[in-house]
Length: 353
Ligand code: SF4
Ligand code: FES
Image 1 (cartoon, protein in one colour):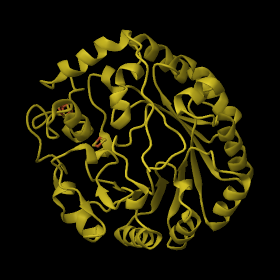
Image 2 (tube, rainbow, N blue to C red; image 1 turned 180 degrees about the vertical axis):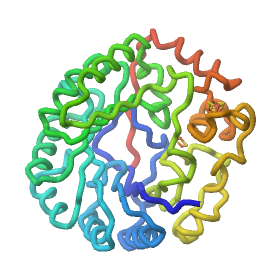
Image 3 (tube, rainbow, N blue to C red; image 1 turned 135 degrees about the vertical axis):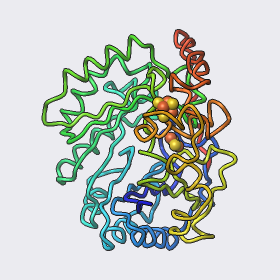
Image 4 (cartoon, rainbow, N blue to C red; image 1 turned 60 degrees about the vertical axis):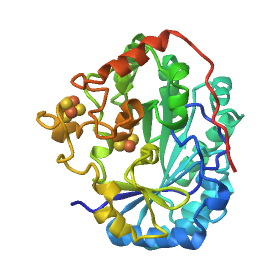
């Protein structure tokens, strides 16, 4: 069994944005339920001891936590590479300088669209200009910058403009990820699902833009694929997630699987949860697979797809991912795709505090 390389530390679910494509749970963790500073420091120590080298400080918006500087200092001190996953709204020059001095290595900045009005509409707040300011602050400090853009029906036709904006911002890397339908995004699926024609055009634009100094990662909408994504490179194989309340999950979305016995770092050491818990061992390797995955030549390539997607679409986390053309549940995805002609209004994510 591998040691984990990465920790996704979801410090809080609080966030100044209300994106309709958010994959966070519909029931967000309250502020009063969040781990305290000392508890997060203990999580970081345990993760490092377990082998974690990369820490992604995420949320929600990690800058909503007043103790973020202290957590950055500590994670740097114990030898972790630190990535801040942020909306950028509160990333002023002063804040960024302080975090950089404490050891922050990388910033992953979300941008909603190339155009301010459209970006602000999806985010449910007027933050676009603040994000552009954050990008420029990050570049001036010499920190590595990834721009992350979630793609959907409303912005996919502007993927060329989005690439141009990321280049203009000086991004080292651009992640263009079509919406994955978990949490709030699943509720808004009909408003977000693009058409196949949109996806085909976008893929061409992305292909033409490749080859420059900016690395472009493009994640397509898997509903339109015939084989599923190798989600998390296999269940509990490389990374673990600690949710704001201390629940330890094999992937950021696994909390949706109602019958998964999630454990909490406040009750059991991280190493025990990684190596021995029922949740982390539930879908490790290939022994848990049924047909058609069990005898499929691709079972070590895509690991049977995504457990959370299987659960969300079939109610059974051990089922073959319904995206797969060999799955007996593929019709579920096809029926969802048939609804892409409609453009219902997306429901903005609501915030619980
Ligand atoms: Fe992947 Fe299972 Fe489909 Fe084979 S049957 S391609 S292993 S999801
Ligand atoms: Fe949980 Fe794919 S998102 S396994």
